[in-house]
Image (cartoon, rainbow, N blue to C red; front, side):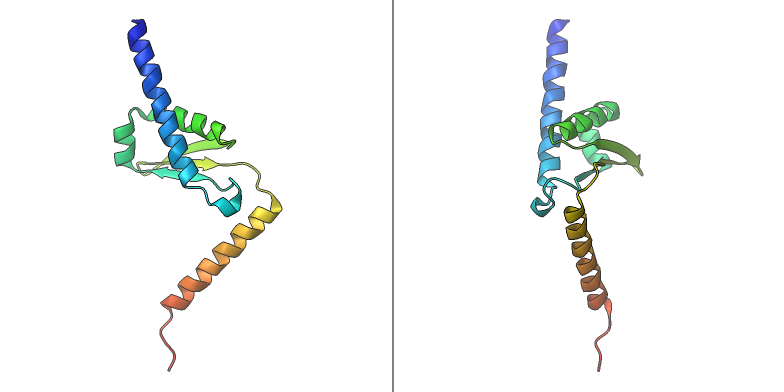
Length: 114
C-alpha cells in the first residue's frame, strides 16, 4: 500500500507544480504578483483529475506564490483567484490599464465620422 500512497503524492506534487507554473505565467509583471487569476476549462479539469484534488492543489500553488487563493466553480470552469489586499499604487495602475482598454474598445466600435 505505501507504493500507491507514494505514487499519489508524486502525482499530486506534479499537479501543484503545473498549476503554479500556469498561475505564474498568467501574472502581469507590472502588477508585482497581484491580481492573479487562472481559469481552467472543463477539458482542463477533466485532464487534471478529481475536482477536489485540483482545488486543493490550486490553493497550495497559490500559497507558494503568496496568494490568498480561492477557487470558484462556475459553469464548468474553475476560477482560481488571488484575493489579497492590493496596494494602492498597483490598484491605480490596474485601473488606468482597464480604463485605457475600455477607451480603445469603445473607439474601435464606433463608426468612422465623415
